[in-house]
Every structure is written in C-alpha cells, then in structure tokens.
Image (cartoon, rainbow, N blue to C red; front, side):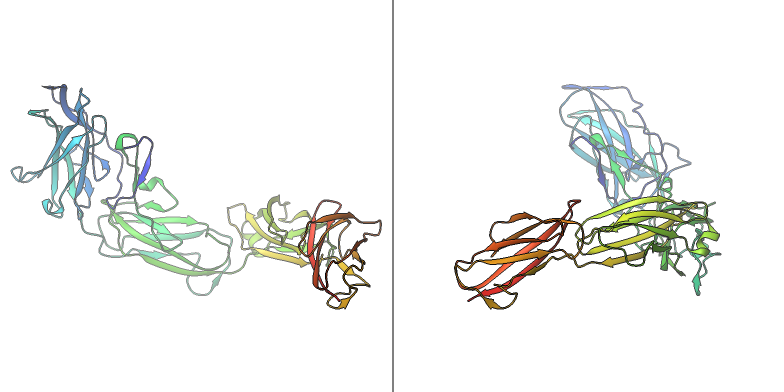
Length: 459
C-alpha cells in the first residue's frame, strides 16, 4: 500500500473511537525473527472493542472485514489468522486467514456473511503465523451484528417555516427530527439535495483505518438526545428564496439508515435593490451604486454586507465584498467598461448568516467603431484592383486612443486615433471581388472594445 492517506468508501459504517489492542502474549521464535500477536485491530474499518459489555455494532450483510498488523521482528511475509465465534457458543468457530501479509502493514481478511446471525454478539482474535510457529492470540474484540435498518422513516417538522404558503426569509429554519418509534435510532443524517453521501472511513499509512465519529460533522449529522429520541436543528438554507426540500434519514448504532423523509417549504424573495447614481451611465464611467436591503429581511436580522459579482460581458468576472452601514445600505463604485456592457449580481448577508437571493442590474453598450469609405462603401461595389481607398474609423463609446485593423484576415496593424477619436487608413486591393475589414478600438485605460466587420466588393 502506498504511503499517504487515501479515502476508501465502504458500506460498513463508522463508529465512535475506541482503543486498538496491543498483543498480550509472549513472543514465539521463528526462522527469520520472533512472532507476537497482531496489533492495530479493526473490524468493519472501525476500532476493535475489548469490552464485552460495549461491543461494536456492525452490519455484516456483505461479510465482515477484520484486520491487524502482524507481530514479527523479521521482514519476510507472514500469515495472519483470525478466528471468530458467537459468545453464546464458543465452539462454533469460523477461521479466515490473510497469507503473505507484510510486516508493518494491516492484513485484512473477510469473514463471510454466512458466519453471522443478526442480533448475536461475536468475539474474534488474531494470531501471527510464520511457518510452523504461531504467536499467542490477541485479546478478543467484540462485535454485535445489526443487519436490520430502522423500520420507520423519521418524522420531520418546522415550527417557523410551515409547508403551506410562502414564508418570509431571514431567520434560520428550525427542524425537529424524531425516530418515529424506532428504539435503536441513535441519530440522523440530513441533506438539502435529497442525496446522502456514503459514510466511509479514511485509510492512512500502512493501510491503518482512521475511524471518525460521523456526528462530529455537524453539516450533515445530528445525534439524537437519547436512543429512539429526537434532535433539533437550526439551519440557514443553501439559497435565499424559492422552493426548498430538506431530507432526513435515521441511523442506528450500526449506522444502518432508514428510508428518507422529505420536507418541502417555500421562501419568498429577500433580494436587495441595486440603484445606479444616474439611470443610464455612460460607457467607461465610474458609477456609484446604492445597495439597499429587503425591508422585511432587515427587520428580521440586520444586513451587514453585500457580495457584488461584476461581469464585464467579455468573459471576465470579479467579486467584491462591501460592508453595510448601520441601516443596512452600502455604496460601491464600479467602472462600466465591458465591451458589450456590464452585468451586476448582488446578494446581501445578514448578521445571523442568512444570504439573500440575488438582485441583478445590467446595461448594454455598442462599442463597435463605425467605418466609412467613399471608394469602397459597405456591402456595395466600388473602386477596382490597384485603386487605393481611404477607410475612416470613428468611436461609438469610450475615450479611444487607437484602432487595430486587418484586411482579409491578414496581419493586424494599429493606428493612433486623433484628438477627436477618429483615424483614417489607406488600403489598395490587389484583386477584384469580395473583401473585408476587421477593426476594434482600444481606450486610454487599455480596454479593448468590440470588433467590427466591414464587407465590400472591389469591381
């Protein structure tokens, strides 16, 4: 197994942390070194429990993976042998082995599902074997088999966002989840997407699992207040308005999941307003925008800031954060220099973490230069092969300082604009027929404006 952690998705779920057992036996001599009982014992990728009164609850429908690191002072592969039995019938032993196990690394083996009965508690031990020499066995690990998922889906309700009608947004949603009469439910998994990620465990160096209590992840798990009990959540929805669906499923001690319960409710818009200082700002001008919070949202939880996404309509975007005044308003100055216009998208952020839906504002500009030619008028015939023609460029928007042009897709040439923003170039066609000119302007601030295509026929 290569060094470094990797994530293994397993159907066997996680559990609370326990202590891996060290070997309790005296070493046995073998060719190439001595052997001792395996250490770092895990079952179902969860810690071994040495307490018979507190066994690890596991689902064994696909068998049970047991593992330990072989105890050996040599560097040759060895065998790790596992024996497992019901605690009520120690004579009913099942044995599995992992041959050619590498010293220093976990040696997993799978006990088949047929060896288990739902609801029974089992003990298992591990032993290192090198040739004809075997170590003492490890202290027992205890597992209770739970292959039965919770029979009922949980109940789910919200006192402040009822499912009928539209609700005013701004306040976190309170959800109450209940096990619905299933006594071995210990917690809940929840989602805003109606999907529930597989509960897995990380595998570290040398194949050693790193079990983590899933309930430490408060973004999707909540422990019940008691077995078969309930839990309460207070959550900000993933978006500011619209139809929301919140999903919950129950989990038992083995992290078997119930069917899901879905709760649908509606939130009205809480978007701010976006107002420019002048109704139709000129291209290239720096314009001040006033941002105002939704009044009902402001009264629920004061707005403390805004996120402003600026799209220059030529593929460039920028997002700026703006702090709000005490009354929830804010101002932001934006240069409107997108070659086709500028699009703004603004959301507000309240003190309690609520993020509103987005308000938008946009303006469109035509920044293509004008092109005129007496000799070669646009979309018409004129001149002739070898007859020079003058083409005049004039700006439609912006403080233009130059034009970049090419004829018939040839090399580009840049010409400076005059004080009035115009420029003229002379070009002589070398053949009759269809020809075209492509030109764009550049502003003093270095912004490239939209490209203009000019078509004409030489006759």
